Image 1 (cartoon, helix red, strand yellow):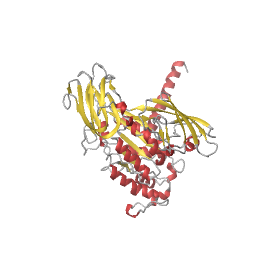
Image 2 (image 1 turned 135 degrees about the vertical axis):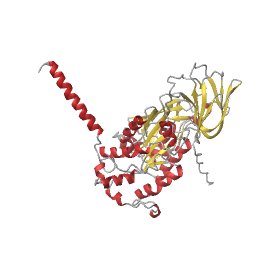
Image 3 (image 1 turned 90 degrees about the horizontal axis):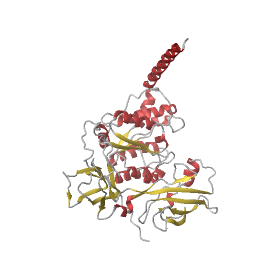
Image 4 (image 1 turned 45 degrees about the horizontal axis):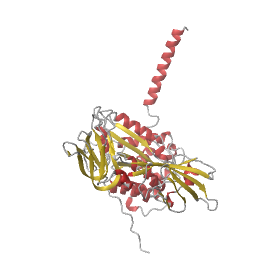
Length: 486
């Protein structure tokens, strides 16, 4: 066979292989589920996000932030299939999708890591699935409603044993939870109550999973790689059950930029410059500028309630505190501030206390603050400057490093680092509009008290502000319990 014939034969073989690959890819490797959920309920609770997706056009590509959050099940490959499906169905949307799940972190830990991972992300759509304490599960839901305007869709538990097929499902017969009926309590009493209380979307995958197993005469273990986690078949099924829920409903009309949780005020129509100042009363915890195309101009001064945003302690946030050696799991999960922070990096030098098991001593240094005190993990710590506060319940060294990150043996000393980051700007400086089909926005303040405020932008009328957008979460923060007299 000559070289030309060889090349032709190679191309024919390659074409045949590619055709076979395409055919195999197009065919599901597993039997598809017949029931994808009650059509009358699909998309409930998530219509702001779905409208943003569905109304995106090549000329106006809505930005939609999606967050997958939970523990190890949420880390599995099914989420990638769901994300790809969204990108495929809504190619004109400017989708920003992240998965910040932390395998091994039940709700008791996730309620702490959410302080850095969830609320600051400000998702338009949260896809949430976690095991653990029902009280902390609700705390996460409530705080998401208090601090963000996210649409939330939760998932009932998948089936992990054949006994689930005959479990108690009548909420009226489910008593206060104990170990014997915990699954029934969570899936048929607690989670439905949360759906109603917080107006959530819900993928009822537990019932759909049961039906799938029965229709295909499969044992529960056929979809699992161990007693809980999904194998390829389980990942396929979970993705196929979540995808159909993420739809725009035809019986719901919503303006996603002017609704009960988001308001947009257009300069020149709703608000106007006067004497070199744009004054905007608003109610909410976040305010953005939608940037106008054109020259960037000079920076415009920002005041909220007469103060620079940098003067609000609540407008500073913190990144995950990560250890070296270590991994993505934070050994210190709760960090806050009593005094006005600085934007800086923090370094904590940690040592095991040889006299007390599972207790640590440390020194703390800020890149701008400098040495800022020493403390112990078994006592509440307030740094000398007041810029860092760590409660005793914020620590989780052994679980984060030894159990999950596999740092064994745990060294006698290690380093933990994190950053204080700004959720504000004191001066609006247009970044310019690089793509006119996608809104360019600048967040002026995120994390304010969810109440009435007054924004003042001082600068020339040519300052490129197209509109002001305000985010007003639907719930007010729950007041801290009153201190009981001694």
